[in-house]
Length: 515
Image (cartoon, rainbow, N blue to C red; front, side, top):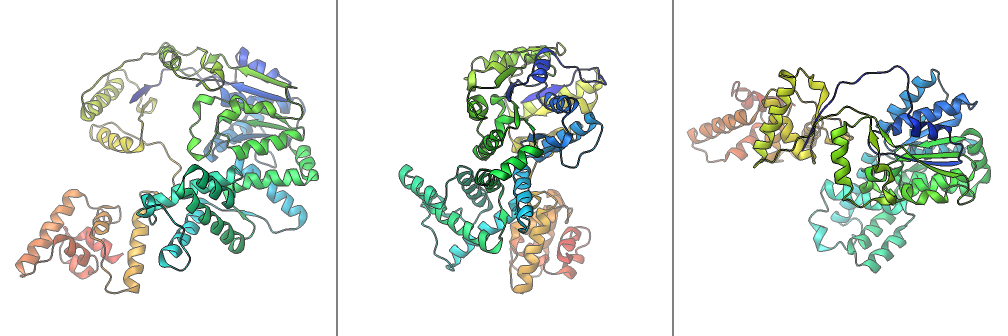
């Protein structure tokens, strides 16, 4: 657990580059690699490189910053546009998928073909769900799944893992036959079964969704077009002369292949990142490209390449940077670890370590530190942050801090809409309503009823739910019945009049019943 408190800082109106950043801006290498540790100004430098290139005569539309995520691309797009002080006809910052999709769309328009479309995560999940449901019902022959995963075939978690496996196979250019062969050779029966699902997935998407690309395949398809059609690569080179890749450690093998093809057209490439900071490896990111694979970019290996290491930190306090340096010296480095050796220009800072006996003590200590900083030192709540290891721990800590009077705002996460807290109850309610409409005798799962009563739709809490269960049980026993509280809950949400007669205690269930 790490508690961060922001040190007072002076804001400057203009961007001032340090010596290492200025060396990067002044470089004329055809392929430039910039390595930097945390807080050394990598993203700021990505923006300034575009500004410098435009100042030398390039049009803004000829420059592009590629980011790993949509959120990062949005921030960089706004920063570049603000620094340039003008507008452009094309986005100045995009994700890899957006870049690949733009290439495919432009070529389709020239050929007069229908515009392609990008399959999103929910659409992929729906296709896999239908395929697995067809296997379970016997409508289609099922793959021979190993016993270790059979119980999970109907769960959303299994579909997510299956989708990740299929997308990683596609990114590495492995078709159904290749995945089947690898499963046999490496003794992975689940890969053998997944190869059959991949074949069916390709058939379904090609027939029912012609011209559609999933995020993993779109980069491979774009690279294929540029390699197979030399005029397409020439057109891209004419319109795109400068590419900056921010967070290059997050590149997948498909993105690396697309970048190699683009570099062959003569486009200048700048890679910015830190091999230590890769966080998308579970989605196929491979930081080895930034560490060593970048050397084969361009037409002549070894020509026109340069590496600049940022040696000044602008964000980490001196004490925090010193602790980080002592820790990282004991950890193996990918590519030599040059980016780890930098001096910080931040404030002195302070680092404290507390060893506590339990989670409860840890939470109390964190709350005390934050409240002391706010009440005694006068530090605004917005200048503090608590970093935890997992989302489950973050949720429990957030509740505890709120009870201790510490206002907490959770960082937004990129989660599917169906998994949002406000959406899950709506989907569950709709599913149960459809089931009841199809079968009037349908019994609603008591666990789902309890979740709905506790949801924002029902508006109850744990105490209110227990009170409702006791009231239902008392009425049942008073009338000579013997149904359990679970059975009574299931019947209650099917009868709005009954729920309405229970007064305030039954009001949450009445709202569910009415809905």
